[in-house]
Amino acid sequence: MRKHLQSFDQALEAYLRSRRALGRAYRGEERVIGKLRNFLQATHRSDLDRSGFDAWRAGLGHCVHNTQVDYAVAILKFCRYRRQRDLDCFLPERSSIARHRPYPLPSPVGEAEVLRLLGFIDHYQLTTDPKLRRAALRLAIVLLHTTGLRRGELVRLTLGDLDLDAGVLRIEASKFHKSRWVPLSASATKELHVYLEARVKLVRSSAASSRLLYNCASRAYSANGISSAVSRIMRHSGIWPADKVPRVHDLRHGFAVSALKRWYQEGRDVQSELPKLAMYMGHVSIASTAHYLRYMPAVVELASNRFGNAFGDIVKGGAS
Image (cartoon, rainbow, N blue to C red; front, side):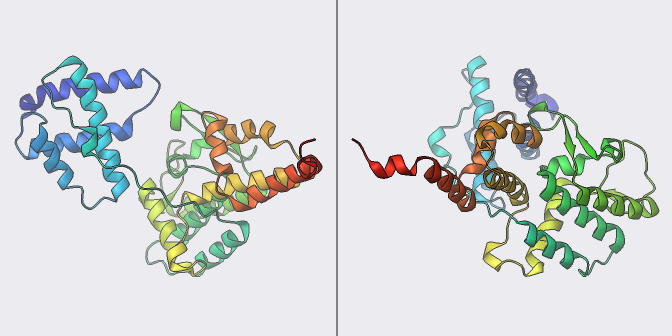
């Protein structure tokens, strides 16, 4: 069957090669196009056409709306690349693909809520490897809250990425191929020691390349696995109303907002501090970091107060 998709496969290989030459891994796009290819193969199609595209999209009903849009747009971009080299290949109309719906505003998780969450975990019923999983979940929440790691960065951490003497983590070639050192707080370092004590007793793999977070004696956490586990803990904790439970990514928002609030309260020049936060969080530029300034009432209030203290007299005086 591979020969029936030969043109598709050749175009895909060239497409990924061209995009990776620009410095992006394109793993997500490769996975989406791979799903489409598997569908074409399973339905005995020789290449992508309108009926195949529509049939594939019809099978995405289990995905949320924005994910369906992302998948369709990924295929659209691939088809545009093909059309530049083959005028006969199928190209979907952009108008046939819906637009994104607005994402819910983040709900940053504060320190008091994290402490309550950790207390809940200590009494949460776990059926398998409870000591290891409890320690792993505690460590995951502490690291997400105190370092602002992405969930993918968290689960890719290996034992070799730890430098406990210096109190830092090595984040290797993460988003945008950026690597960085992430200093740990005293509380995060303590939590890491507690987890490692449980891990060494229950997990046989101790090589430097071995993943840090395990959910049982033989299997490391995946990104989806850690998200599901932390989300479940958040829902069951009763800390938030059922319709306002934060997302796992909101822990990263909480880290950024806490840093911005602290700088405003300490009277620092926030604009000059933003590059430091961008480096710490692994952003490609401060434009991404500035995203956390939006829609955060606590930060907006502090910024407004600072502006009022500095220029309030000018504004009140009006034009002369």
